Image (cartoon, rainbow, N blue to C red; front, side, top):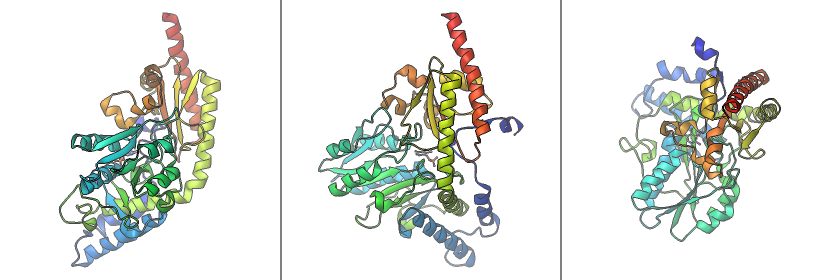
Length: 391
Ligand SMILES: *Cc1c(COP(=O)(O)O)cnc(C)c1O
């Protein structure tokens, strides 16, 4: 832990710590009210069922949904898989076409590749240089057999917000379902599923100062009622949409995390936007020759994705063990491939290799930003002068 405590965490898009107030609410459900929410015959089960349903109601209220429209999952990866594979299987083969964007999380793109291998047709829309999908591209891609459009609410690498309300207008009038992966947006953007016109929405607790392994999928129950075939079959939990004993403490933590995120949203959004703007201006003045990836305005307030010219992101990360930040996307580093998001923005291979992502969070201070900028300025200067020496 001592080595870790000297590492400044700037990777809040990858995960967040559990807020102590969230943990406090979860604790009774480990050792006191630890019943199985599906055990209907006694008080242990009833107590667990009660808190699960209260949490469901609270989560639904926070996104403008009805209680029965919330399905608990193990996280956004499962929610995305359930949304895409579940809807595709329930509606095949009459409607066999899905539209998505080039900058989706692998938890959307990979299930679509699998569905593609099963015969479903997938259209992958391009994005502009800041990572935005053009609503007219969505409109043009819709065909008579189009089942679903899946476009994320906010991108996890460059933070760009997608024009979901405009896309929602298009899908609604075309009679096509809309799914959004709102995992990154949830803490920062006010989300109302009816206003947005989304039929399915994925979220995860651990990106919101809640526990890992808890998430949800909103599934519209009306106008239209979404047909969904389950991925996990067994005890018919969650009205048959997702079998498996419910993670009661995780669900309590998810509800608490979403409540706190909503309470803190306005103040944290403006504080973090100022901090990321400050960080970028310090990079410009103290480091120099820095390029920003993504939209400077319409973005997650805690995101800063930049490239320092002539400096490989990998070299930076290796030289700065006292800073925790990521090259491209932590979610695809297991694959060690250049970021598909940055490539979709039109960056050259070299620009992709230079890009680093900073995600600021609730505990990040201005002093932290100053520390990070100073350390990066030192290392960038050293790398650049070494390169000049060689050349
Ligand atoms: C983190 C993330 C996921 C995966 O969520 P898990 O809960 O970790 O499975 C999916 N989509 C986006 C945009 C993410 O940032």
